[in-house]
Length: 199
Figure 1 (cartoon, rainbow, N blue to C red):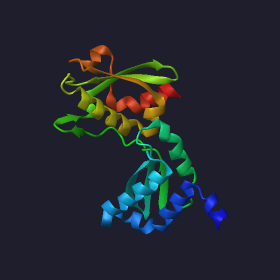
Figure 2: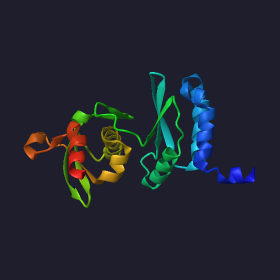
Figure 3: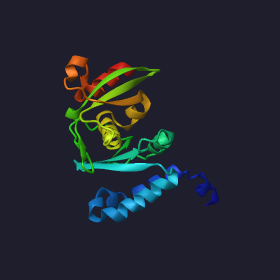
């Protein structure tokens, strides 16, 4: 018995709990707060910075995303946990928040930012790509909200892994009246350009 317990890694213990509670997790909407609290506690036993997302149920399967919440130091913990996952018929286990697209408007308090409000240029930054984000209406009063909202837009457009591993510096500047005069790129093209420049 001691040997069996000793050989159980935190990742294995997590997946044993996950498999045992699979039906509850699949239908978490019935008691979301309690189930999410339990799940968060189990993930913290593996690594304190791990978090999660669920996708919708499609054809009897549901996506379970293991995320480091953008904290690069926790990336190995994400990979280790996903690598340790057993084969679960009803689940698709995904490492890191995947790209969701650019069709989102981010609201932070009274401040909102959408993809049409952001243009960008880029330049090499070592083996990464540095981004200059040109943000409509950027000012000293809203720069903190703009930084937070633009980062969420980036995360949605590129996915968690790409933002941390492929993007170098990020600079934010007020958007000029006519972006095309300055040879800027619309935000909707950012994933395609980042992929092309970092391969």
